[in-house]
Amino acid sequence: MVDRTWSVCIRQLTERIHPHAVAASRLRDPASWILAEAPVVAYRRGMAKMITATDVVRQYSDALAVRDFSAARRFLADDLRFEGPIDQFDRADDYVKAISGLFAIVKGIEPQAVVADGENVAVFYVLQTVVANAPVAEWCTVREGKIVHLRAYFDARPFAPPPGQAGH
Image 1 (tube, one colour):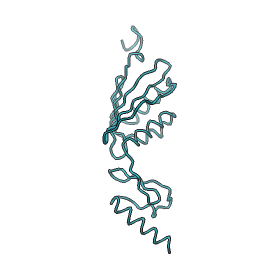
Image 2: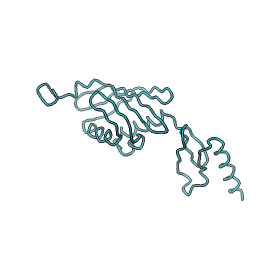
Image 3: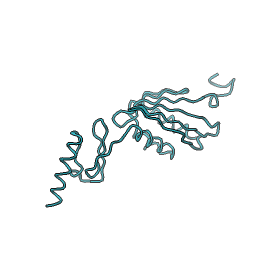
Image 4: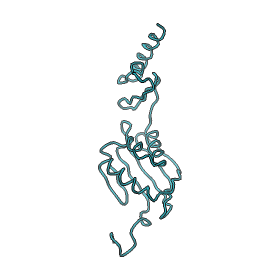
């Protein structure tokens, strides 16, 4: 009886916090997370936690750092717009394919800073590769828990083919 009363209280509280929430007490797997509409809210066992744009970008970056491209992909909108000095993509799958190829030459990532303003998050890091250590700035726009636009800024000259080869 106490458990049922507790469940009803949690559901009512959760629905007051966010009307689009699904009460965790109704789930078969109480440890499941449910992402609701914006603002993005995660619900676990009736406890609400705001997932910020910074959280999304950090989790995406952490997945890339350990080369878990499928985990990183989960933080990208299907119609991700990527713009960088070398490539541009309008689909997350195309971007992930390219970034996984790039990581063949990556030795490590040295995080520098994260700056956020609402849905916009800027990440600064040094990408350590066999070619060069490249300072990188990425500007991510996050909506509804997914990165929808990613702009990368770095000096692409060390990664360009030598003069006289394809591309020159």
